[in-house]
Length: 397
Image (tube, rainbow, N blue to C red; front, side, top):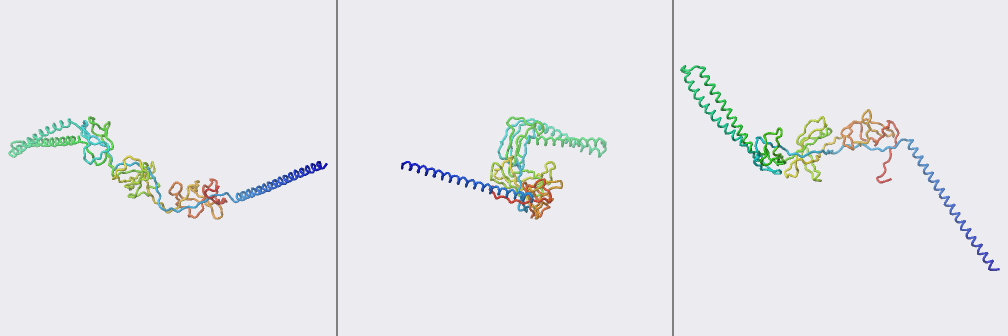
C-alpha cells in the first residue's frame, strides 16, 4: 500500500515539473513576440520619419552639387605629334646620261660637302667635246684670216682702191667669225661642265639614307619621267620637326621659346629644342598654324623620320576656369546655373575662351565667388528652388 502511494506521489511531481516547463516556455515565446512587435514599431516609425524628411526636402527643392570657379595660374602645356626631319634633305639625281662606273658611299655613311658618291661613264661626251674643240680651232683660224683681210681692206679704202661696200662686207665677215668663235667657246664650256657631272658629289655634309644604284646601271640626267634618284642625303645635326598648332594656341607660340621632344621608344628621355619659325598664318582647312622646331643632335641619337611628340608651354591668361560639366548651351549662348544666397537658381550668361579639356576658360560673366551647379539638368529654370547637397566622404557608402 505504501509503495503504491509513493509511486502516485512521484507521478504527480513529474506532472507538476512538466507543467512548469511549459509555462516558462510560453512566457519566453510571449516575451519574444513582444520584443519583435516593439522592434517592428520602431522600424516603421524610423521609415516614416525618413519618408517625411524626404517629402520636406522635395518640397524645398531638388538637391544639387556645387563648385566654384578657379583663377588661372602658371602655364598650360599642349602635346602635338610630329616627325623628325634633317635640317636639309635632298634626293640626288644624275646630271648626265651614262652607266654607273662605281659608287663610293653606302647607306649610313657620313660624307662631307663635295665628296664623290659615284662615277658615271659617258664616252660619248668625250668624243663630242673633242669634235667641238676641233671645230673651235677651225673657227679661230677663220677669225684670224677675216681680221687680217679687214685690216688690208681698210688700208686700200684709204687710197680709194676699194669701195666702202666691199670694206663693209669684210667687216661683216669678221664679225660673223667672232660670233661663231664665241658660240664654239660656249659649247666647249657646256660639254666640259657635262663631263664634270660624271662625278656625283654630295651637295652638303650629312648621312646617306638611301642608295638606289649598282655598278652597270643605266642612268639618265634629271628627275623627270622614269629617272630615279641615285642617293638620298640628310643632314642630321640639327634636326627639325614641323607641328600644327591649333588656332586656339597659335597666338601664344613665339619664336625662340623652348620645346620639349619625346620619343615613345625612349620613355623618360626628353630633348629640348626651340621654335625656329612660325607660318604666322592659319590654314583655313585645318585651322592650325605650322610651326618649325629646331632640335640639336650632335650625338646622333635622334634619327630623321622618327615619330615624336612635341610639348609646348603656353601662358594661361589671368581669367577664371570652370569644369566643363557646369556649362549649359542654350539659344542665348553658353550659360552657367548659379545658386544664390536665397537658394534659388540664377542662369548666368558667360563668354568662353580657351578649352582646356576638362576645364573651360571664362572670359566674362562670373566674379569667381559664385556657387556653380555641377551637371545641371537641361530643364532647370531661372528662379527654381534647390538644395545644396553635401558631398559624401571618399569611400563612404
